[in-house]
Image (cartoon, rainbow, N blue to C red; front, side, top):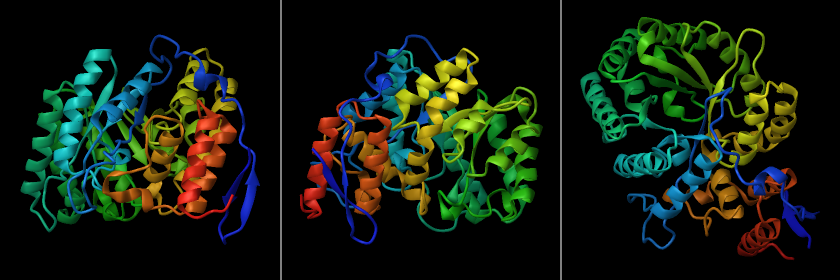
Length: 389
């Protein structure tokens, strides 16, 4: 079979799908944890396609399918970063839904022995301007819930804090307060404005060099309470310079979905661990690559992971915040869910040419366990859009 896939401008091109998946996609997951790097996949949520909802109503989640996908990631030795940006936090999933997701995923992690870390933010606050005290209280409420579940906390960047803070000291004071309260070391998350425009100027400055100094002040003042940092700025050079300045024992978890192979592989002065949204669709190949790296085979690691970068750069192209649409498309095509529906109706956030190219790149990599089934599903999507066969 061949498919006629649309390109930008309305031109249809002929594509012949592969007939067999890559070996690591269908092979039984290797037992045991990854050892050379700590690797989290930020996981998506599966919407309930039969719920009568709209973008303005609370999300309806298919809990069985959502938790099954997390078990898939754990089976490969990956950790799950829960209720993060990839789960459409603040883009379809509100705090009530995120809190339920955290509770359910944490319980599932305990049941299967999976590693989990959960996002702590301030998204229970209603729209509008809030005081720094209100922002702090919102953080405290979410931190308490995450710690009650036994999960590691990830202190996410806050839209409310970005709006309320007027100086770098506001960030220093608030984060110092939260870190003193944290029962266990947390991960600090710096999400760039390409992922969320409301976070422009985070850490008190739009100048990234100045913002970096404030960020480092937070870490160096409380190194015993910071397990690591997740940096999502899509700037490999800046991440390398930052990780070289971290206190001993504080990890850098790359959130760079453009440059992750080189950052995880590292150099003679160090390397990054990983907390990545792209490892949602790349779970099996990411795990296989890190297991190769566990044997000190950096060349083999890069040979496995480098070819995936073109797909990742495509999914995360501007507007970057809509990368979740491609992630969920690939989960549907791979058979992890029965539909291409997203909370908040976000399945409409990318064009058909974009989705078609995502399918093609993923198929070339052999990411679909059943290429014929993925082809049939892609064909059904093309039918909906009126693409002639």
